[in-house]
Length: 358
Image (tube, rainbow, N blue to C red; front, side):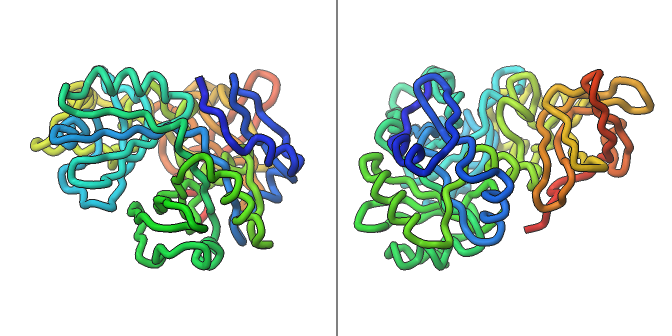
């Protein structure tokens, strides 16, 4: 079940094209994917991400529980730090990717994908200690993301938080337009940007306040996808899922395999490393503007070698780009491949992301 966004009427008034998912709606686009994409790269885009899930884990055992559930190293986290990592099942496959925030020594916030929130909640509650307090704060938490090179100059006059003090994957708390908020710098566009977490009842006010600046435009799901794809960032349910491990997805840097850390799924990853990885997630750039679709077959020398997981036209490169799982031995920079659904055929070259340097 998806969480409702408090900004539904705001989107309709802006002429957004909505995407219905259960009882939740988020805009696919407002004025056009390419226009919104380029505006974010050049100025600043505002994203309604209120649908995301937010959980609080608190107590003397919270840090140990977090360390055992997540793949990233958390024992060295300072207060005000956030990290990207995974929840894995016993087979080392990805239940979800998320970001963990260290609020205090004994309090953490997990930000999870909307479509995974309910299964994550059940899984986490079944794996934490009896003395760790768990709270789902999703329904009372709003999240707006401001992304783009002008983000700092746009947001600075509205907050007492020194934005220049927020390093990548860090956060600070303070006042934004008179409301208590947490501002982080994690991002998914490759641009300078900030994520604002605050009480949901203030969402409409803050949305309107940010849009008063002529350099800010609302951005929908379509451009959000093309922006993250230009950076080669994986999307859960497409490029990563519970059928693949982080090693297969090329995301091993977010898995701390040191002997000092144990976590759920680690034994399976050790075994996979020993046996060898058969398929790898790789990037590709097409020869022209035509884009393949998810589930197109990947052919190498006319033989099936993999499957497309994400693809789209890149507004910056003016070519189609994408990600695919391909036989490990073929995931080499410069390998020529063909992408097809049996009717449409697209020629491409294996290329390591990011495809665009911001």
